[in-house]
Image (cartoon, rainbow, N blue to C red; front, side):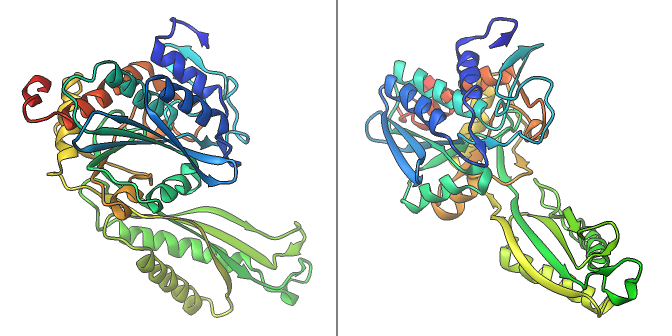
Length: 394
């Protein structure tokens, strides 16, 4: 790892994980999965590999401390692909500078994954007072819509509480948004641009559709969620035409609709259909082609009174990060699979901030990584404390 000051053990591990490329696409996490397996095996955990797709595994690491509840740690091994980005230093070369560790995955979400493993290692070294199980689920394919966690819950994972590692600045989040991304194709008739009357320009209804999406976004802004703010509808991609002197015969617009708890994909389908109906009424010449599903994930939330929420807030205070209350996580994540499908009360917490993720020169504050390991350990010690040992933990 380049840079100064010298890295601590947990930061050295994180540097090693960053240096093991696992971009989605293509989604190859084999090297990171091997590192998780080796670390978990060395601490005495029972390790299981789940093959989600050929050559693409989830890694499950279980520590048993006798009868009691099960706490699930969940984080992902894959990262977003940096190939089209311009970085100051190579994305898979960890750089420690000015209290920050730079590299792809530093905050999203290898920082969380390494801190969870470090916490489990501490639990394995000092198991006194623990009763129950800690199950780490290191998953593939989170950046492809949560493929690994979807498979995980399809195999019947159970738990009494869970922590999903995502960059929250170590704030405790108990709600997050879902994702509804669709591409809409508009058909026209290509013609020489010297004779545009012989064609029908597909870009024009596409542009009108973009403006209608802005109007719909303004409507959504009027109904915010208390933790997450409003649902949003954003045009993210637009393409059309083939040559600068040809009337475009086709155009495609991609929209990103973020869901808040209470929203459903079926309701968003209806909403999109209504926007397209308004387009057809305003432009009868618009020929709407295929509406394609790009990404579909669900929102979720955990009640404030859930034990995992109370434990996580107390653990944050234990490590010097007291919080007045919980927050929302503005992006989609694997909490939805654990809550909506497996029925496991879940919070989101991890080092780094969402605005540092998916961008060039991704970084994480080194103090947050160190504190994350302590925080996860405290969550486990509180969650797995028997009534007789609870006072010692507190």
